[in-house]
Length: 329
Image 1 (cartoon, helix red, strand yellow):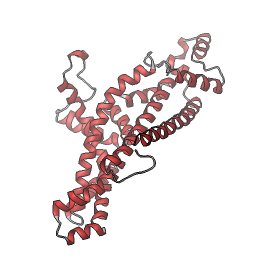
Image 2 (cartoon, helix red, strand yellow):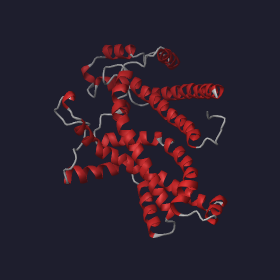
Image 3 (spheres, rainbow, N blue to C red):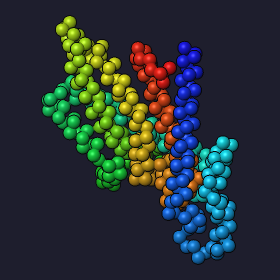
Image 4 (cartoon, rainbow, N blue to C red):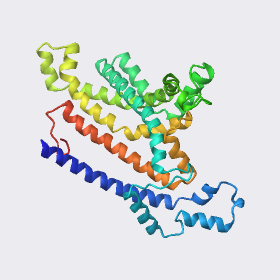
């Protein structure tokens, strides 16, 4: 067992390092050839305020005059030393900015991820059991509608309905404006989280629901289910004793693979609700040419998604010990 754990960790470590190297090189090259001028983004729209000498000094300070290979090598060596650079927007170390923003985004994404998984799984089971009935058709239509709904559009509709027209929830931000951070209560934070969480979770329901429905239908049509029915097992006993384990593994795999999707959805949701998370930071970094911050967030999100998929591999064995794969414990 110890050897399997060590082998698993070594394999995943090699994959992670290889992935980070590839992502780092391609991301840096793409940003280097971007039409956005980092010097102009740093100075602002009015370039006349700064003379040519000052612009040259800024470019030299950021190392923009060096060949791209030298800049890439210098950035890579800094990463190995734990230095991700300084954000041009926030005037703070990149890791410090990511740490602050990620805590806010983690709460948002975590709640939405859990809610979408549970609701989607339940909807998929109900639709599968009621296959062909009006309930199944209604739930399928609902999921297809959600799958084709853009996150930003749904967020705007939620904002208009519940914040502007009904006034039930605040319009945006993560806490009430004009209040010190230490004076913000937990209820205030939760009140600002409800609409962004609902927006993200509603969008994420469709995939897991439709997949679970189809797997449950396939399971009910399998030979071992027919044998169980012949033995007189029906209803909830048939679902919980025989079908649930077979549909839970694909659902877990699909849901953990959705880490990247929910991160992308969080970027749009945070923009709509002005939520100060990592998604809003990556948009600002991209629009303002903050290369160190943008690269840091790209690498961080890569690690985040990778560990989500790795956790799914571990849960395979926890849910069903019969499974033994080469890349599992």
